[in-house]
Amino acid sequence: MKSRIPTIFIAVGILSLGALGGMGAQVFLMPYLVSQDPFQQWKFVQDWYERTTIITEIKEVVIRVDDAAERVVTRSEAMVVGVESEGVGRVIMGSGFAVYEDGFILTLASMVPQGYETRVYLKNGEDFVSAEVLKRDFQQNLAVLKIDVQNMQTAEFAGSDSSKLGVPVVMVAKSLEAGELITIVNQGSVRSKDQAVVRTNIFDKSTLGGSPLFDLEGRIVGLSTFEPNGRLVAIPASILRVFSGF
Image 1 (cartoon, rainbow, N blue to C red):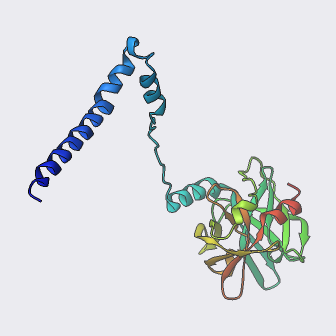
Image 2 (image 1 turned 180 degrees about the horizontal axis):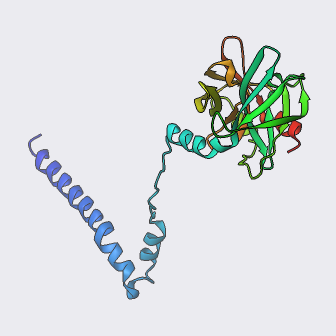
């Protein structure tokens, strides 16, 4: 048994030296041979070079949802308007958005009943213009208003990929509070959907109806309505696009 111990140590030493030699060849010798013209034609040098894996640095950019939502709000705030309709003893308030730059506003039909006077607020509680209802469909709960304003900011409608389950969405609304027009933002994700509605996990007050719902690229996913419990459900972009003729 004792006679085998030196043999084992000798074998381990030889293997270690071989491993170190192989590492040295890979790290120092082979790169040197590849860099010298006389050796580049040697077959084993060419084979080694062709088997070498070149690793390229990859930079990963991580965009936080909150940062993306903030950019959406900044880009879209100018296109979102406050809508107010006044009839006999009743005032209805909500939001809408510019669907065409020359003063065409898309909102909910329930916010602009027949016989009501409708106003659109652009920047503050005292800056409003009278609106004409061009198109109203109570079955789809959609209406198109026209105001005498040009060069309004608009956004494109999103495709079906933006309303996939779990996709982050951002609601941007305008609300008149104490005579002042303020921007209200809420964010969440798509909870469920079908062809007629996009359901979210967002809860808010019903007076924010008519506010656009955006994806994180600033495209319009839908138009907000609210269930009795305050859950935001949106009329999807596919229906908005057809109704507005975009």
